[in-house]
Amino acid sequence: MEAVEKQGTLFQADPRALAERDAGRADAVAVRTRWVVYVGAAIYAAVFVCGAVFHYLVYEQARFDLGNMVQAVWSTSHGHFLEVTTLTGHEASRLGDHVDPFLALLAPFWWAWSSPVMLLVVQALGVATGAFPVYWLARKHLQSERAAAHFAFAYLLFPATQFNAFTLGTGFHAVSLAVPLILFAIWFLDEDRLLPFAVFALLAASTKEEIPAAVGCLGLWYAIRKGRRLVGAVIFASGTTVFLVNFLVIIPHFSRSGVDPFAGRYKQVGGTPGGVIHTALTDPIAFVHAAATWHKLIFLVLLLAPFLGLWLLEPLLLLGAIPDLAINLLSSKPEQSTIQFHYTAGIIPFVLAASIFGAAKLKRNPDRTSFYALAGAASIALYSPIYFAGHDVRLTLSSNPASKAKAHALRLIPSDTPVAASNQLAGYLSARKRILVFPFVRESRWIVVDKNDETYGDLAGYRRAVARIESDRDWRLVYSARGVEVLRRR
Image 1 (tube, helix red, strand yellow):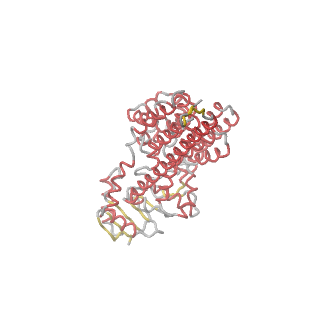
Image 2 (cartoon, helix red, strand yellow):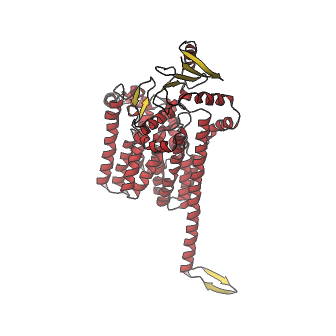
């Protein structure tokens, strides 16, 4: 019992008063920590919103992928569900490429704010909110406000999170919002609040075709960890069924070729779903050859090492990361195993959540363990889109003749006419029925090109195509400055 001395007399303190004092101090610490996390997430969101907006203002976004998303949202808001113009100029459903009907939910936002910037802002704000369920989960299972704050900031600083909040070059992706949505789903499932879990799980599953399988894996974790076998089985079966329907029914049905347009990335392991199964049965070593490269090893290190293997202590929860890990590691497209793209969205929430549960199982000082996780994420946090966006800020704040030329050229293009544009400029003209990527022209009435658009793999071939259209008598040059040209069909 604590003793206090007052005016030379020794008094025994009231245990109840001491308990109330300690509880008051703990509450004050909890409130301060909570505000630090919430304000930190808000500042983070503001920084990434600014980064994305500056990147947009210097015309670094592109038709692929921001323009695709803009056209899908614009088309839906005008009564044409997820319609887009393909690279070759055909009208098609986006569902033939990716099953991400979440885009349709953004149509009402487009009515309120008809700008591609709206999508970039939604993405940055959405990813930042993922810090909240991370904080709640860590506070609940580690019984420490400080440890919870450590994990929340580790989530925000983690480069994979940063590149989902603001993806350089390719812009907005619905699947990036799967990061916070899955984290909220895990939180509500851990709380046995099945209705809000179902809402967030469905929203997450609508962001990309493989995400339902990831969400379904939560059913296995729930069935074993919580003992709710029937509910867990329903979650797993539902996620698996939707996943199979997406790949075997929806994509082939809406694809112009009748098969998944990205099957070519998986030729080494069979390409189509049937081919992959055949390879697995006849030549399983092909999967090892496809995944075992130095590039993919570095990808795994950057993705998993910052959390010090804590996720290994909760393997059932980490299962949710397997679908995207497999899709990325077996692909021949190097961007899918590069941390600065959106392909990590289905992995991040499971690594974070499994690391929190793993830290709780470790039975060590949670503040110290969580601090090590924060240090691991912070040690590579400079690998950040904000660092690369510094160039954009300088260009925006300075007098940039190239940007002024692009802005003037874009203002010349009517909003209701078919147009062909070079890849980056096409990203700013996609809110329309018909938008083609030059050199595809077809029935376009206007062409706008930037001769310095370096997103073309064959830059010399691209410039030859520009020279041909300049000499074509069917087209009249109406504007030219800084390599930016606008032509109108005679």
